[in-house]
Image 1 (cartoon, rainbow, N blue to C red):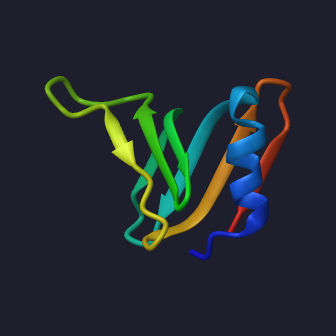
Image 2 (image 1 turned 90 degrees about the horizontal axis):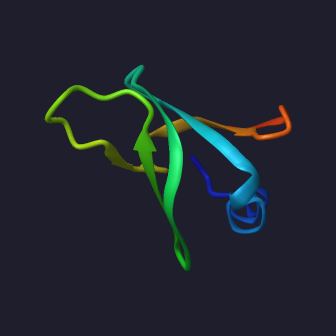
Length: 83
């Protein structure tokens, strides 16, 4: 997935307003969580998964190379989808 300036700006400027991030990967894996770490040069996002097995690492490094869709869910109910 190409990292667009709109996606970068959403994570940079709206991070505090993002309630949840859903990531769909090519291999049908879906990760849902909230942002725990965001670096911007280059864009590097770490999520804490909403659901994970006991003993499983709850943190997920967002893999832009495998991602096909990223949906940001905001506290006000708004959603933004990047493909």
